[in-house]
Amino acid sequence: MWRTELRRLANPLSGSQEWLDYSGTSVVRKVMGGRGNLVELRVQGAAGQIEGVNLRLYNPQVRQWNLHYASLRNGVLTSPIHGGFRQGRGEFYGQEDLDGKAVLVRFVITRIAANTARFEQAYSQDGGRSWEVNWIATDTRIGGGEAGR
Image (cartoon, rainbow, N blue to C red; front, side):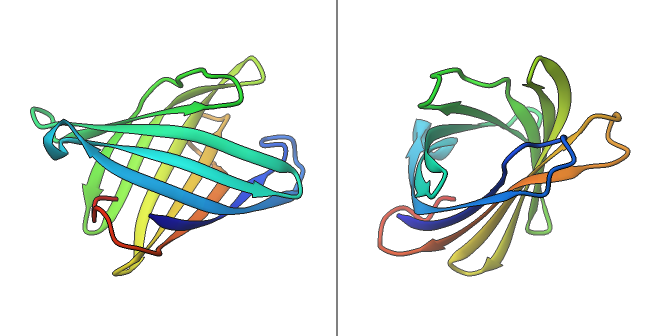
């Protein structure tokens, strides 16, 4: 289990700089013999609660991970974002729908310490020339369990 401290931009790609803060947990379980994992996120803050799951599946043929997210709010599974890890940094790219507009999405995972990881999501509406960070989460291990992250 992981303690999750999350900051989310209230209105991405609107010019607003209002950030919302949440705290809670992430539970990570290995699936498919370790070739995937399922993350259950539960955080809450003054703006409410976020609950969702992230299914991460590894494709050994292309040495790439595919990340799929679903929010409990609407039950919709997002289009996957694809990428991999190099020198302790994971970078994943894809496309998302934001208020009816297609935007590029970038998700970056970095290891801060042995039991701490940082997750950052950003959107681009100009083909990847510029990015606006809209989600920053820092997870710190708080108990035993699977080491997979």
